[in-house]
Length: 268
Length: 217
Image (tube, rainbow over the protein chains, first blue to last red):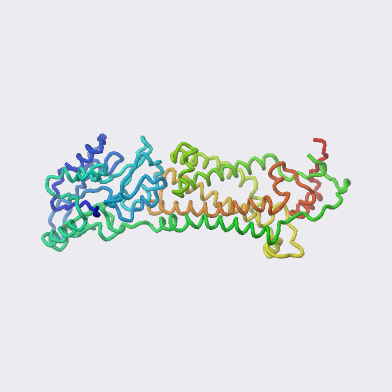
């Protein structure tokens, strides 16, 4: 099957939050009581029981015009996913067909390594179940040829799920219509994401958006270098010790001397 | 104890050594089960990888206690170099690597052992600090960017400690016959002491602190 992506076009989004509700419904996630933070954005950020939220933002553009910006935040489903690289248990993996990032919660051991590694700071730890949660692009739906729940619920066409090529060519056309500021977000980093934005304003304008997300170099050192090096070093020492034993020989005490009793001193 | 053997370690020293050694090895074992996918299977004996993680974390606490006891007990004897004697020894590599007619005399700990102790102490403290925040990343005060660097630091500590473990194992057993008794019974032969730590033997004889078995026990 072809590589697929989900697209969010904020110029078509009315922030009805049908997607947010559909996500909770399909994934069986209860809502928790939150606090009013002065905006419609609720809950204020992703939670272990909220895989996606719509951001609400008042924005004054350079011309002095006030705009209400919306943005859907959820797992970006990176092609080069830091979470998959660091996951010690294989709980996080790439979907073979679509290249999205799936999650087998049975395998999750709650080590929180993905929480620290994710360049988008998406995964959340649930202290109650001692496991991590995140959007899995409704893997149970997409593998059965259904749209992800959020896409299915979207009444305006702001969310789309489909073949990457088809969506990208539709995005190119839509960009011409939207004008110069319109930007695709997600295609230029981490090998390309499988959840992309088509933003009507420049990305920097959006609150909380990651400006230059990348897999931290610390992860490369950790997983690509130190992992094999640790075994190589230990192997080298074992081999070296063996060679030392057979070539140089152990350090044995000198041949027995007669130990004289009268040498004995001290408290024995 | 056989008559004529000399006591070189106390029961407390051996207890701390083995507490540190066993917790360290268990940490290596459980840590590798998580670090290498092909070793995930090690989790089987602990009821799965989650159990492995729990054992790793709790053993980390034991290791921390043992490490602090070891540092408190050994830092004066094994944590400080003596000049210029130690330099002379290092220049001959203790006679371990090439032929040396006369290896400079060493005291209770030779500079190689001191280097090993200092490495274990520093890497151990590094493992404690990084491990604590890997366990409780929410408690890390310096932000996500720096938090991400704790993971390779933890892996670096393993890289050093794991390699050093095999050096220690070799030199403590077949590389220096007779040595292992110091950490098992605590009694060694005079010949061994004369070869390995002549300075210390002389010092104990001079100060009258040498404990020699009369063979009655």
